[in-house]
Amino acid sequence: MSTFETLFAAASAAREKAHAPYSRFHVGAALLDENGVVHAGCNIENAAYPEGWCAETTAIGHMIMGGGRAIRMAVVVAPRIDFERTPGGQFCTPCGGCRQRLAEFAAADVPVYACDPEGRNALFLMQDLLPAGFSLETDR
Ligand code: THU
Image 1 (tube, rainbow, N blue to C red):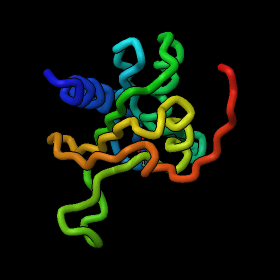
Image 2: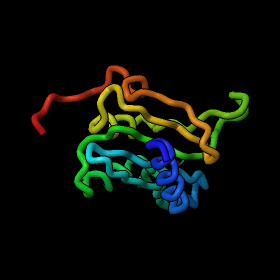
Image 3: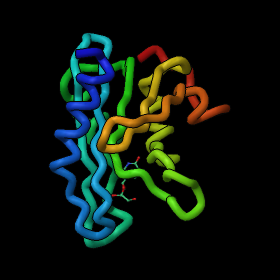
Image 4: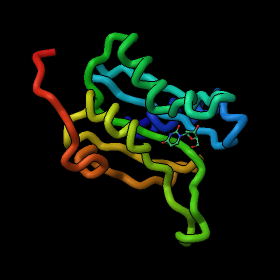
C-alpha cells in the first residue's frame, strides 16, 4: 500500500466512529508523523453545537499523545458537498480552525488530501490551505 492508501484506510476507519448526530456529516482524518506512525480521528459533535470538534482536531490530539510532533501527510475523508454550486460536488477541505491547528505541526510543503469515501481526492499543500498564516518562532 502507498502512504496515501494507508492514511486513506485509517481515515476511513476513523470516519466509522464519527459522532455526528446533528449534522450527520461523518468525517475521518489521518496524519502521518515524523516517526512514520499514523494517527487518526473522527468528528465529535455535541448537543451544544459549538462544543463539537472536527476529525482533524481529534487526530492531532492522538498524534501528540502518541509522541508525534510533526505532520508529514494528512488525509481527510468525507462526503463531497455543495453539488448545487459545483458540478460533481466539492471535496471537504479542513475548516479554518483546523487549518491553523494543522499548520502548528505541518510545514508549508506538507500534502493534505481531501478525499471522498471512494478515494477520489483533491491534493493541497499546507501553504495553500493557510497562506500568510499566523505563527510564532519557538524552540519547541
Ligand atoms: N468537519 C470535520 O470534522 N472536518 C472538516 O474538515 C470539516 C467539517 C465536521 C465538523 C462537523 O461535525 C461536521 O463536519 C459538519 O460541519
